[in-house]
Amino acid sequence: MVDFKVVVSDTKAGRAYNIEASGAAASGFVGKKIGDEIEGGPLGLTGYTITITGGSDRTGIAARRDLPGAGRRKILLSEGFGFHPTHAGERRRKSIRGNEITTDFVQINAVIAKYGEKSVDTLLGKTEEAEAAE
Image (cartoon, rainbow, N blue to C red; front, side, top):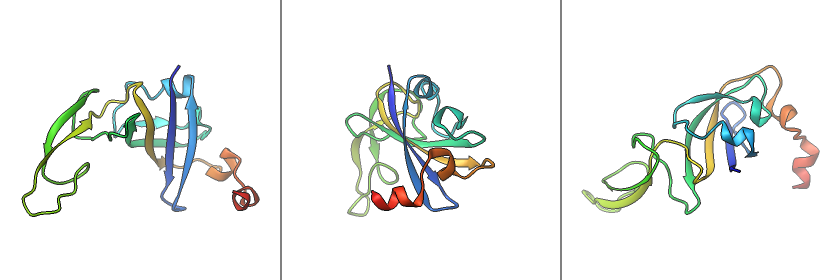
């Protein structure tokens, strides 16, 4: 059985929500690619559509949108996501995951693309009192 931590960002409210996905909800992510839109119903966000923006595997290696495939590869990076050079012209070979979601992923990052009728706080059962206690 596959389990994912899905971090859904709400750009209107400027907040992010951690959602545990297991079973059928997690199986809906396997085989999808970064940039794909999926329905939020299995995550408890009925009426919402979310876009997958990234993720990482169990060792913390991040996935890149522009790297096709499902496996891990060592690629030469000069800038951008996964490597931030300290010197001008610096390049480094780094391990990066492909853009396809597999069972090796632990965390999936997503952003809300289309909003539903109810608020996210209402759907996830979050209230101001519960957040103050945390």
